[in-house]
Length: 77
Image (tube, rainbow, N blue to C red):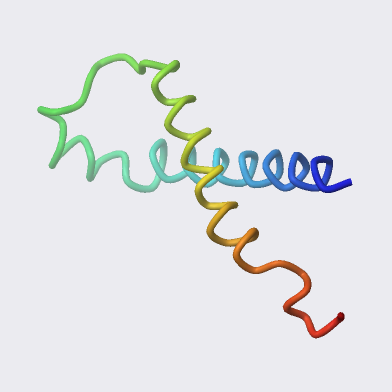
């Protein structure tokens, strides 16, 4: 049960994170990044590196936010 719950949390977190990041990088802050960091940006995306980074990042978020705060903290024993 625990691995199924973690997989669902990981998938949901990845979906939400991807949607928010896509909105942020593609719409909200696109002009800001082009203006201030354009000289550092590549014209193409290295998808393998991006997927590896986001996979590790999301695992870190879950380990710090969910695993450190387990449902047992709700007062049920």
